[in-house]
Amino acid sequence: MNNQTQFTLVLGGGGMKGVAHVGVLQALTERGLVPSQIVGSSVGALVGAAWSAGKSIAELREIAIGLVRKDIFAVAHADMAFKRMRSPALFRREPLDTLLHRLVGDITFQDLRNPLIVNTVDLNSGMQVFWGLAGLDEVPVKDAVFASCALPGYLPPREIRGRFYMDGATVDNLPVGTARILGSDVIIAVDVSASNALRADTQDEGFASVFARAAEIAMQSILELRLREWTTPPIYYIHPRVEHISAFDFDHLREVVEEGYRATVAALDRPEEWPAPGDTGVHPLRPVTVRVQRERCIGCGACLVQAPPGMFVLDAQGKAVVTRPDQEWSPIDGEFIRHCPTYAISARPAATPKAAGAAS
Image (cartoon, rainbow, N blue to C red):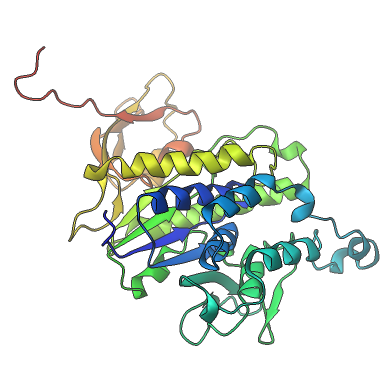
């Protein structure tokens, strides 16, 4: 990567964990790396819109760190009391509308300083619509971003041109596919989701938390399917370590912004891991060793179902055996590990061979 590289920055959804995108933009722009365009879902669209509209990194950091719950979420008590099951959403639209007006005003996509694509889904047809593309760039940015943030049940759909749109993450939380038509050399995809993190007691936190968790798992499963066969342009995948933080947590926003910055700086400081011209697939690629703890394995066969064909077999004792222990993985490989009911499978970074002539 250098400042001549044409790259698309894809910013995924993840609730308040998405303020990590501010730190990502800070790290990139400090190195003189400016995206040719941003593609965003949900909070990724919100952060991308604010930056594309001209907000400085300093302004974005101040706004992100200073957010409080009432700036986005206010329970729709009246709708829920009078409309009951016909209430459009759990939360009112006014707080997010106010925040979006503060961030981008009334401008359309044509007025932005930097190109922006916003991922939404037509509620009634299921069509995925990317506002900001040719022919879809004359609408107010704030309307498209609101729609992209409108997780079903949480925020009401937004009407645009006579149709109603909701969060694009319902079908594509990290919309890298759009970048294929934008002529980029590489895609930098920032994923702040956390479905592979073990949670405790979600069932005790109410229906909103249960629904959010279910949506998170579904989104991650769709993402893994999309990326498994990815070819070009190559993707460099950045995953800030924010999976331990709830999507609706306002108490750790500074930590989240700093983690986005740290993860991106760490990636930029490893230039040898970035895709070279002509490379395909998802990067970085790192060697790992996969193992099965026989004493934990119960022979259920889940690994045979979830892993790539032929990677595991059952031996004469009915225990799983990995046929190719030493592999090279991208960040989206190994999802089968979390499907083992006894946690018998593990993957560890492979030992780095010593350089020739090095002291033993």
